Amino acid sequence: MMAQSVVETCEICNQALGIDFCEECEQTFCNHCKLMHLRMKISRNHTFKNVDHEEVKLNLCDQHNLGYILYCEKCNSLACKTCIIENHKGHELEDINIAKISELQVEVSEKLESYSKEIHEGSRNSLLLMKDQMKNHEKACKKAIEEINCRSNAIKSCVDKIENLDENLNKIEREYWTILDKRNGVALLKSLQKFQKDNNNLDLEIPVVPSLGQTLAAQNRCKYSVFDMTVGLFDGYNFD
Image (cartoon, rainbow, N blue to C red; front, side, top):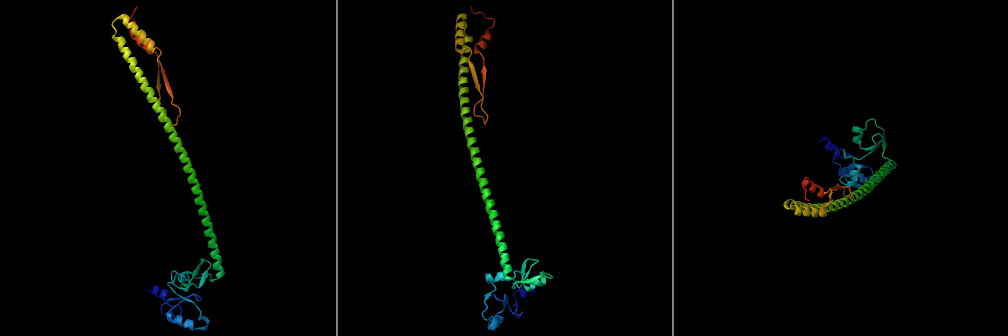
């Protein structure tokens, strides 16, 4: 409660509540002291504002609600009379100098400008980096799509070749069983000769599905003579 009474006490009479702030004297006044102050010739034109006014709050100590009266060089801060007693014992205190305040304002302004430039430059560099990354990502996606399409076409080609190969193998199998069913030696020989004519040195090309990243499908060629394999089944037989 003591702190509350100090905060709200008139700086002139130290009894009533301080409700008005004199901008010229930078002190809080109760209503009675304010009227007396305005009756004095030297201060009759002074300007008062309520202590709750935003501009007044800037001139009052946040901790004690009293007007700033001195500047502490060591702490680089303004001080009211209570601040001087509590926080600035033994410190070198100066009168509040408008030039000093202006100097501090310039310093703060320069720092803010420097920070603003750094933030702007950092944001600009980050944006450029993000754009480059997006371009690289788009290129990578485009390349991946092209490779996927290429592989898709290669797979389709492999499927077509395998289907064609399967069809040829089925045909060979049918002819093979036809030969085995022949009972007459002459008929068997004629069927075998036809089989040789149709399938001698038949090349069976077995495609290999390409891996992603390849642009051409690798092929493993398996060459063999179906006729030779079939004739091998009849070793020892004479059809003459």
